[in-house]
Image 1 (tube, rainbow, N blue to C red):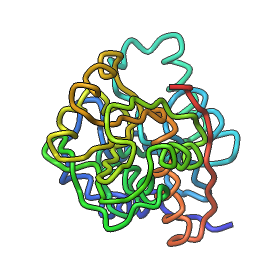
Image 2: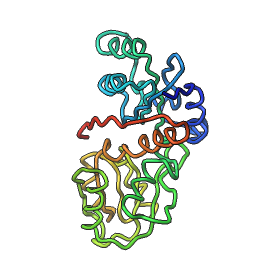
Image 3: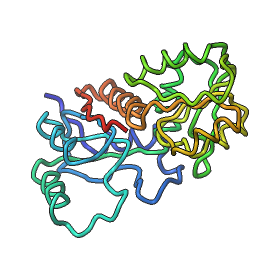
Image 4: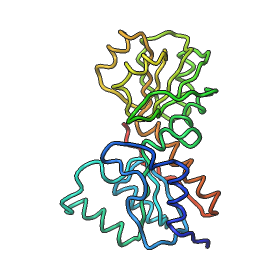
Amino acid sequence: MRHVPLQRLVECCDSTLRVHAFKDWDGAVNGLQVQNSGPISRIAAAVDARLTTLRLAADAGAQLLIVHHGLFWSPTHPWTGPRHDLIRLLVERDLAVYSAHLPLDAHPTLGNSALLARELGLKRLIPFFEAKGQEIGFRANARITREKLVQRLAQATGTTPILLPGGPSACRNIGVVTGGAGAEIRDAARAGVDTFITGEGPHWTAALADELGINVLYAGHYATETFGVKALAALLSRRFRIPWHFIDCPTGL
C-alpha cells in the first residue's frame, strides 16, 4: 500500500487552487483545517464536513477528507455534545480535513461552476460573477431551448431543477454559479445573461426574475457542488497513485 505525506497533498492542493490568493467568508478557512499524524494511503471526498461524512470517511479507511464546506462556519465552542463527538472522531481515527470553498468554485478546470457548465454542453466559458473580489462563475453564449436546458441540468445533477421562467424560451447567454447565489440574480442580469443557473435562492427571487426578464434555474446547493471535490480528489489520486472515493450525503437543499 502506497503512503504519501499529508504535507505533499496539501501543498499540491494549495498551489493548484491558489487558495492563498482568495478572500472568502470568515468561516471558510480554506486549506488544511485538521491535520493528522501524516501518512495518507486513501482519500475521501464530500461536499460537507459533518459528523456523518467524517465517520463514513474514517470507516472507509481514509486518512484525508477533502470537502467544499468545512468545519468552521459557525462558532466551534463549547466542545460538548455533537461537537465533542466530531472532535473525538477526528483525533481517534487520525483523520485530516482539507477544505476549499471559493477557490474550488472558481477554478477553470476543477471548479464546480466550470465543470457543471461543461456538463451542460456549454463551450468557450467566460469568467463572470464576482464574489469577494474574484469571479467564481462562468457564462457562455449558446443556442438551446429552456426546456432542453432544464433536462440537461437534471441529468447533470441528478435533481429536478426549479425553474423561474422570467426570461426567453430560447436561451442565448447562460451563466452558472454553483451553490447559493440566487439572492444575487440582479448581478447576473447586469452581466447580460438571460438564464442563470445556481443551487438555491430566496422565495422573493421568483418575482424578481419576472421583473428582470431572466430565467433562473435552481438545481440544489448540494447537487451543484459535488463536482469540484470529486475532481480535486481524482487529481490527487492520479498524481500520487493513491485511491479515493466520494461520500454522497445529499442534504435535499
